[in-house]
Amino acid sequence: MTVSPSPRIAVVGAGMAGLACARALHRRGLGPVVLEKSRGLGGRMATRRTEQGHRFDHGAQFVTAREPRFAAELQALAQAGAARPWAPRLPPGSEAPTHPWWIGTEGMRPLVDPLADSLDVRLQATVTGLSRHDGRWRLALDDGEYVDGFDAVAITAPAPQARILLERAGSALAGALDVVEIAPCWALMLAFDTPWELPFDAGRVEDGGPVAWLARQSSRLGGDDGIDRWVVHASPAWSREYLECVPEAVVQWLLSALAERFGAPPPPPIAAQAHRWRYAMTTRPLGQPFLADPAAGLWAGGDWCLGARVENAFQSGAALAGSIADALGA
Ligand SMILES: Cc1cc2nc3c(=O)[nH]c(=O)nc-3n(C[C@H](O)[C@H](O)[C@H](O)COP(=O)(O)OP(=O)(O)OC[C@H]3O[C@@H](n4cnc5c(N)ncnc54)[C@H](O)[C@@H]3O)c2cc1C
Image (cartoon, rainbow, N blue to C red; front, side, top):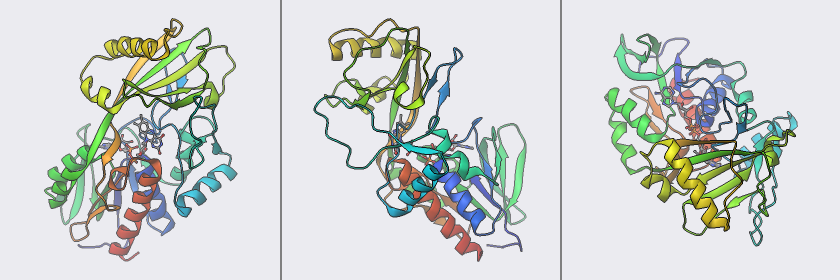
């Protein structure tokens, strides 16, 4: 790999993995450019505001720390006022969580926003391909533009999307992603103008049916406007079976499933919307923290390397940065 005096690094994706990687590179004196296809940071750590003004955390529900490094990260976020513990009323008979649940102070986004401080993040920049020009990487964007001159590229998109980019780059790393499996998740967002009287505010449903998780949004996002908002996650099996259905049908089927599960339908919703997470939860991880071809200046990582949780994305991002900085001699 040819390395310039001031190496240029591109990080594809501004979820937890991409931002943890970029921040760690920045701390080592490098100046990565982060390219993110959507309009905001955080990837699957998302808060949705609907057209009617309802807010829902419809992706990741909470984060847990099992390793000291991420626990320290959460403590720092808590001290900065960005993170707080979340201990909602659980369904009767549920076991207490083995690790405390943490959420952002105003939705999940505050957990990632501080990571992007001082970083060069370009939003609405979808990377569609990578090619070599003058010994460095050129990244093509979906608007027909490109950015180039990169000595190193770290791809942190979900595994199937990372695989496509690696293939387009002609990288042998692409094949390694075939072992990874990721389950989809349909998320249902509901708003009621009378409370939905359930004996809990959040919890898993483990009966093998279509519904896997429910969370009352006022238990985490606040709001005293008298509207009761819920996020419902369908199970991986149900989500896979109904993956290609239109959202309007998914709303109706999941409302019926809720009525059946709880013995009575919820109140008539004043707003109901379904969101499909095509790549939600890793069911078979890679088994190592990242993929690397230092000679080619190519790396790939994300939660899918080690597991299905935000902490796994953080671990992968931090490990990616170490490998890239070492390869560049920074
Ligand atoms: C419904 C649901 C519930 C979950 N619940 C939990 C939970 O309770 N606890 C927990 O710990 N985890 C949970 N998770 C998993 C958690 O959200 C992920 O592990 C974590 O957010 C993954 O981070 P990441 O950076 O690896 O990937 P992502 O968050 O997916 O970030 C990847 C980023 O890359 C961008 N991107 C993709 N392709 C391109 C491209 N070509 N060009 C530019 N940008 C691109 C994407 O827009 C995205 O922002 C849940 C996930 C879902 C979907």
